[in-house]
Length: 326
Image 1: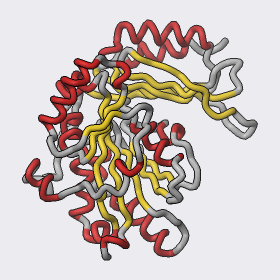
Image 2 (image 1 turned 45 degrees about the vertical axis):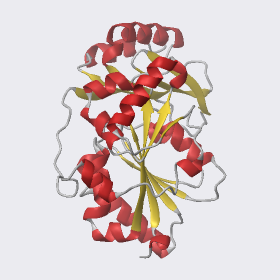
Image 3 (image 1 turned 135 degrees about the vertical axis):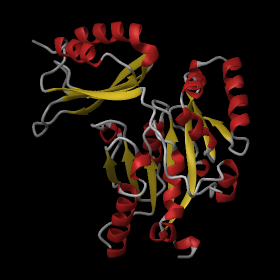
């Protein structure tokens, strides 16, 4: 297909808790008149991000098998192929695709898909890789995780979130470090995903030649290793939480295990609250917002996902059980 007729694809990446879903919601809310197909991937057996996405006319496709890297030759190609088939038949209308990767994904294998499968590569145009960087936690994440470094290295645009939580000197040092790691990607501060769409979509930023300079094995290296220290587990409950007990328990656990808690998030059913509570946290910082009201048709349930390094799963699960309303 001619480039003008191809469907542009944006890969949205960034480490756990950096603000990818916030940016995605910003894109979906904007009055751009375009229909967007979203492919959403999460680390762990159960995903909650699709519940955090503000749905309009968008087509949301979710993959929960742990790591989008492992699905390059399988699920991702299959899903893109299915979207293509439905679009060609007129059963589905969309103008572009956004792939939001799990925070633990190396974006390289995701981008490979568009160059190793002819049918996909001739139909979809990889527009850019957008990486959201958490200014508060990035220095530690870049030190500890190969994936965080890969996300920066492959980026066509770097969006720096949470700069309100760092001082000027800390931000300056991080920006200098990011520029050393990836001198070709413009860096822009964003506050709660507030980035001009012209700097995120249709920027034609992905340059295969530049990527091959960064990684000469890009088109042939399809293997990768998982970071075995990082694991996830899920807590589910069909009873409401006692808000005071839950806050006390989580505050205590975060004091002890915060440095090893990379990301925790969920949809909570709270006693006496007619609305869902959307709960999210990174390391020592946590917070909640009111979500959609519960309806009579809803099966009320709490789902909490924890992602971290060598966390005491049994201690967390038993403690959360004790926080349920009697």
